[in-house]
Length: 317
Ligand code: DAH
Image: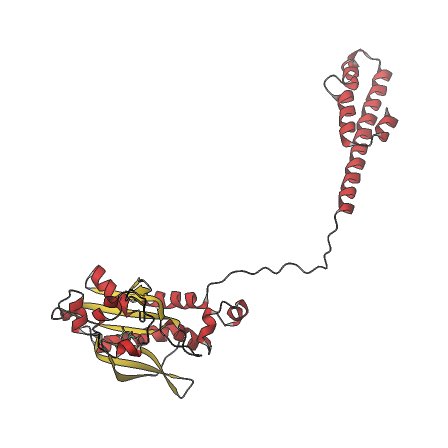
């Protein structure tokens, strides 16, 4: 029997032989049941046989298992010197990152985020914003018009109108989104992003120009994480009166225009069904890509939209 066990070449055969010896109806099982009737010598002999058989099975099982493992290993070959596949983890786009930072700042100041359609009608993009049909701003903006008279939104200011029409006043909102104009160079892309703020409340809340300037300063200084030197210039926008432009000192000597702003024009409030004798407020708008470029020292706005992963990886975000 011991020789027979050694010659077995497969684990299945070994298992079936084992069952025939040690199973419920196995030969050894039967013999062991007679133990009580045996003489001492016979018992000793049976015990030895029992132990030897079990050991022989165990040993053959180990040998066969090793052989099977070796066969498997020699069939598989792992070259540990090969390069592994690079694992690229996705990240948020730099502009998404910028928006979430600015958004968090504005939300901490009590502003709620709004979006609006990129294809706008004349009312929301121009007319409600106090831009009459003959106004040169409509040409100045060099817009992409659709055949039906709609326009690819030229400014997120359109979102303020939608917000006031939709939610009424008092309101403290910011609008974000893509805007479109016919211009293209390193600092202008035909598609770019704007962030717009609007705060309108009862006149007795005294929302003033200085609140506006302080809000913009707070927002920019938190975003750029440092104190900024700011300059305010009088300007003109049809939807604000008075209107200003805000510059910040950059790289020690240069003044950079960073935002347009002003007190919401009474006509704009009226166009949204709000009485300008009861309500007043301010609005501001700035370039979403532009502040991202400044923060990270990037000089070509078009790169944001190329989708070039090498650039995105090295853009400092
Ligand atoms: N819409 C202006 C632009 O695209 C930016 C702007 C200026 C927005 C003044 C405002 C504002 O809300 O009050 O150039």
